[in-house]
Amino acid sequence: MKAAIEEKSAIINNLKKENTQLQASVKDLTTRLNIVESHMRECNIKVNGVHEHKAEYLANTIVQLGQAVKNSLSVDDI
Image 1 (cartoon, helix red, strand yellow):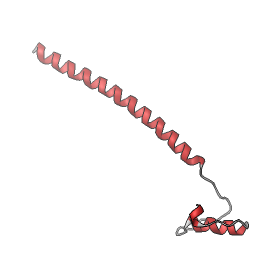
Image 2: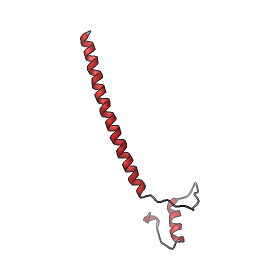
Image 3: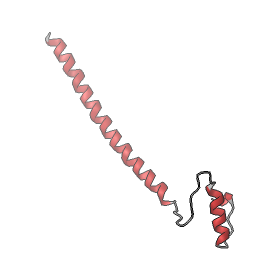
Image 4: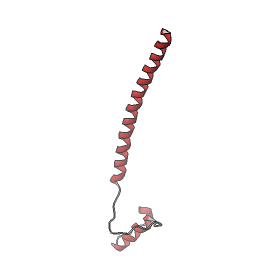
């Protein structure tokens, strides 16, 4: 009986240790994901005053915007 309790206690301790390591890993990965998402947003631009359409192709909209301000852009530039 005592051996079984010690075995279960060892299993519980191992699970607690593993849980702590997994929590640290999740925290680290969450931080890294937030940093990556932040870097991705740094390259974004926001265009105000242009109406959004559900079936629009954003690259064409940007090309048209470039033409409106007399700046030639192609879809390959985007």
